Image 1 (cartoon, rainbow, N blue to C red):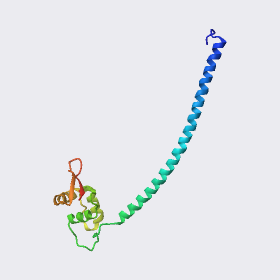
Image 2 (image 1 turned 180 degrees about the horizontal axis):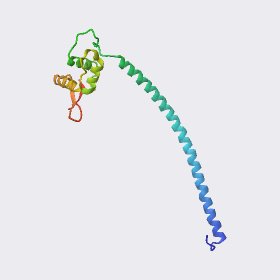
Image 3 (image 1 turned 135 degrees about the vertical axis):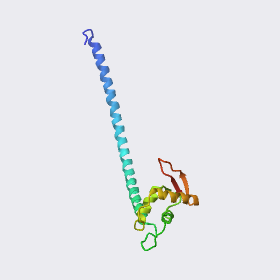
Image 4 (image 1 turned 120 degrees about the horizontal axis):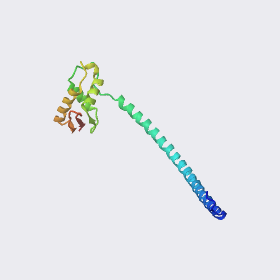
Length: 157
């Protein structure tokens, strides 16, 4: 520090620093109170949202169990073997109108539902042919045409 400063100047500078620090302390005290209030508000909101989330999650799980229990009728072993197209038709009868379908998802569902009636698993290519024919008949609508890098997408009418 320079020795050229007078005592009055040093006192004035120190008073200014004290004033500035007091102002900052008061400001941060206000901010602390504000943030404490905001934290309490957000904690209440978070608790309410968590409760709604858990309720919705439980309801969705219950609905999923109901949907899983409903199986396609006619999958018993006593029935005579039918064609793959008819199996896919039975799967489609259980679908809701507007539900989106892909050949691989239909093939997987046919393989799960009619596993004991099939000589070998249905491929997605076979399911694709059946879905394309059903679309030509008007039972399905083509949403997206299949390409080499993605499969076709259909929706039930």
